[in-house]
Image 1 (cartoon, rainbow, N blue to C red):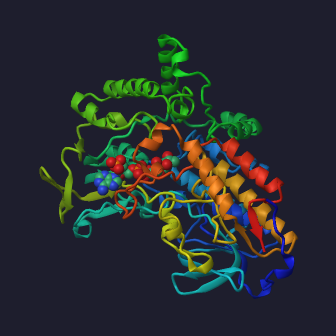
Image 2 (cartoon, helix red, strand yellow):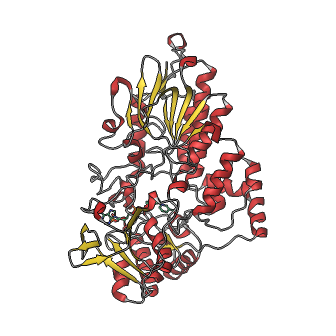
Image 3 (cartoon, rainbow, N blue to C red):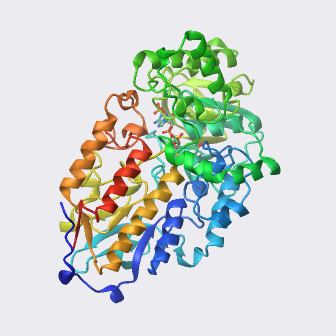
Length: 546
Ligand code: N01
């Protein structure tokens, strides 16, 4: 298949458009895309709902919010000056420091002058006559731009449980992903946290320290493992900095861009003693080592997965004093690592505190929220504060919130009704000149590494077009079908795809998201990048240019 360059039919209304490119979102993706598109001399406008930059790290300011990738593997790698200037204070830095980092990036590269804050995009329709996107904002403003880049995150549409009475509650309440800037004071308060995913776990371990009493409402427990965070003294930071080239090279080589590498051995290729010693070492090590650096068959071989699950279950039993509570905290419906593993710091020990109570919603479901607190099937609880750590309408949810329509007026939401389909996670056929950063079916993991790759790929494609005076590109339907088949092939045999979680497109709080779908690319990042590079090298075969 060859790229078609029909330069004579191109639409050249550049001057009449408001911008060359609109980027939606000023998180890490949006900021970096702005930086790279400016290099092409484009007029770019970034539209951001918040009042500041940072995206995830702007909205998720709940107590305990922090990295679970090593800080130095997460920061941008593109600017040596930035790497030289910025010191991380902890191996897994907290939200306030990460937000400061995002602000430094915005200031250092003078990004703010092209970012329009407090602006929600409500719709984006492709105007076929102009070969441009018509983007409407919450206040009715309409902008036209040749290109539209979505940098809207894959976990950025918070979802509330569908309980009756949420609005009736007379105390203070918040979702972890929409945390008030002024913070919430828990001292002397009776607090409820609903939800025990990665956000809930981080919040619970912190709130338990200050609340007078904390009640945790858990539906299905998750397998959590120790983060082992620690400060980074100046000398260690200097060493880390000196090793940045090797560190980023390593991130380019690992399956999910973390510094942890999957062990090439199978679980049963070592003796029982070696296996136990290896797992002890991983459990004592920092971060995602035990998840991303475990035996290669941990997530595909049922028996291997059962054994590691037993290992982690025993750790929970050792750490939680009350055996009944320990059993409540051990997942019974999925094996270790098949859902996202929350990283914790004394999370399990929080349940040994006299001021913390665990309520299993499997035994005692919440029936409604009341003016005073929570009513379960067993009793009424009174609270001063309720925290909803109930997660996000993941991956496609942030797209569904915008009325996105492509050629012939087709809606993206309808197009993706049976599950998302994309070309390399970046483009969708029938949605010309729309590019997604961290879109469905792109490589995930330690996200900034993938963000940098996606952004540069998009910059190169737009550069390819502008150099040749091409105004419009679209993915060919057969390219999308091919990528979809590849993504599905890569998902085969993975235990995680048999489990309900946001990673399989499930959100019980959102209409129409109750059926498991392949929303993630589960091959390796190096393979993903190689495929994308091939597309670029071939002169973008797989795309139409008009
Ligand atoms: O959301 P979740 P999250 N009634 O969907 C429960 C990233 N992240 O915000 O499992 C009762 O994982 C739900 O219960 P169940 C990370 O990728 C990163 O915690 O559905 N309970 C679950 O316990 C993560 O995976 C960091 O039975 C309800 C919880 O709420 C992703 O964000 C930190 C309910 C939701 O868990 C999402 O994490 C935090 C209901 N109606 C997050 N609805 C870092 O460290 C939901 N729940 C970088």
